[in-house]
Length: 426
Image 1 (cartoon, rainbow, N blue to C red):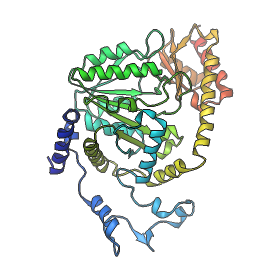
Image 2 (image 1 turned 180 degrees about the vertical axis):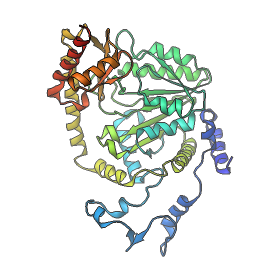
Image 3 (image 1 turned 45 degrees about the vertical axis):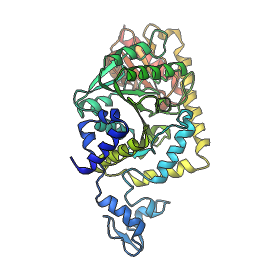
Image 4 (image 1 turned 45 degrees about the horizontal axis):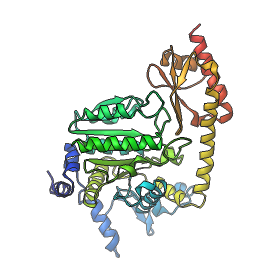
């Protein structure tokens, strides 16, 4: 094992041995090498005469570039062409941290790191899987979950997914099922909670959120080490009857056996899907935070090396714009209007013979639970006969993204789904 990895591990063992023990074998071996990037960073501060360190080309005192590209971009060449640091632009990291504190009151006064920039949210999940999951480790998540979790945690890392019912009989978060599933994990578990949930569009109430935190504390108190991943892809799109912040702040510092990790994507939250910019943030004591940042930088350096610079520059400018909050509220109102309209349409009793729907109050999606039809059969029929595209999440559930349907078209959409159900039951 490299001496730098040993130093980081010793620091973690001294500060919080439980978090060190949560690391995967890969996580224990990771470190940020003192190579080209660290030497170039040092030269950037001190090499006032010539800086011949990093592998870019310069011309006339700025990064070399094509005129036909630069002519279409209204940004300084230094802010788009050179490599961004593996951890991301420092100004962007700081601004996102400020945003987290504003959006999540429970994070005030808690010990958490400066967000590290990722190549969108999936990359953040992948980093967490690499750091903490060994073959055979368990990922606990609700039954309704994003299918890409299988690739990230099972196929890539050899983990096992164990699920629990998301909803109880009253349409709230199934706290007892969550408790029972977690109680079966005796040494270590990775818990993945995604709110607003993909595919159902559900976020727990304040009371249920507090109950979730209590379950995690109780299980941690019993000796189980818990890596708690908060997939906050659709953060901020809370329309009604839900907690309005991430569970991350509620979990930060509650127990030494709990490591909360917040994974964000500016992609969904700020409607810049193709920018591929996300963030991973840890809550722990300062020495552990430093070690985790170095290990995370090591993963990034060994995979994507660093994220796209131009995307980070544009996002930073957006977050600092005077128009940001105004336009974000405008888009929120549009999304909320679509969610409300969807519920109004679904209240029509003519749909009852064919489906019910899972509770939804947030995010991009909602899910229909079909009564007596196969979801894939209906999906294909809707495509072929009506030109309507939906997602078959499993054999019974159809995911509908109201996020990409105009409010005025939502009634027609569900009428066509209804027509397809009628066709298949004649």
